[in-house]
Image 1 (cartoon, rainbow over the protein chains, first blue to last red):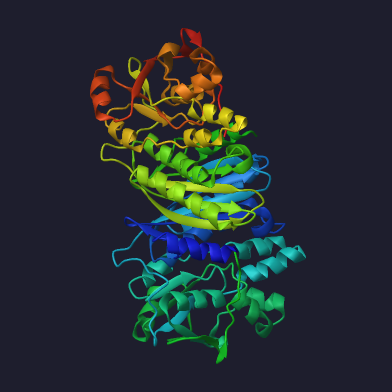
Image 2: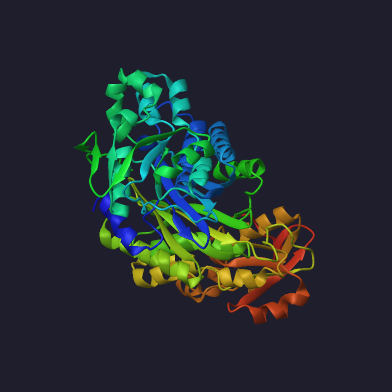
Length: 291
Length: 291
């Protein structure tokens, strides 16, 4: 059974699962595990690793429209080097601070490979959490920020430009944006598996489709630069994933109000329709990053 | 830096860390990571693994005197076998149900070795959480249940008596007991690192000592049996750890009331004193399990 099939099986088994985070008793909870070999390219600092790992969990809290309360992490490695450990905790603490949450530590564990398991906890807003299901035909579909920072970072790590790559690898989890969007959005998730796959997931959850305009996709400048142009950057920006922006549906008439309410840029990339996920009129393949 | 030194460093760095669980904004949070090679002997079923891993985190919630709300787990393995995954989720769900919490899923991850990272979340009771610091000279020191079930299980796994070993490896996290004890206990933690080490940790946190009577230690019958007698079982019961009972201090005059209020057996094993940790009048070494 591959990871997707297993996740689908679990989503059927466990009521609160199958969204960016589980909702239980007024709380929102999410957990992830990341490994050195698969998630942190050579050159990733432990500060960036702490920021990014905890940030990925906080992003899931934001995607539910919830308030971020706290995060914990298990730090596992073959040895504990004080500087590395302090750097990791520094990154974890700083990303929590950036979204108004508290990093409250966790556990250490001996392991063959640097591995971290992070959990973030949030509170459901008064207006309720925002699920993946709920987009209605006619709604506008939008994304926050820019797509492709992580794809650009990976290329730069490969080139040895580690300082810039580390910077791109850190991101602000969209918790403030998620809270601002929560009263308005009909459906929302983060694009950590890539925009294409996320649209398919929203379509499946909400029994709807999406028509997207490639010209409206906010491609990160850094990716356009390393890829040699916006055109070349479009495919990785759409499918690479590992970015932590929000994709959401919202009634057309709320769009202007929303843009004023959120500090981050919002790009309207298309419209919700009855069925089928298309970009520029052609079927958009369900391809992306499998974590 | 070894794990203990690293943990001490982190406890100094992060305010809410350094207890069984972190307390933040009315919530109690704890996280752990377990691995096949170090934590699950050959013969451990995935049902038992799910129960035990999630149970270990719930035990930390109980040790704070908190109400258990929810738990999540990352399930990482080199392949996902549906039966194993379902069994793990079954064990995780059942241990949550045993303490009135909800298992809300988590994440899957590809990894070389079966590894699980669990997080439990609780709510601080109205009377406040119970910390490791706070034991006062003259208080009675007690433990819940029996010690040595895991030591016995390990021996039985080695002998191939896996059914009985699995049964001993599953335990009821002391959440109900912890809540009943919370208004009375002056200090509390779980004995997952072994009674001896736990007493030293309570002594250090509370700047006090303990005098314990070996004859009063509730040694698990199964351990006495596999060890060839209660006398032979005393040392592993005291130092092996991996049991998830509570050790706590409580004013003498509350003891009878407590015994009536908790469903689990409570054994008074000694008395809090000004300094030094002794058993039968002799120094009890700070030895135990390092996770």
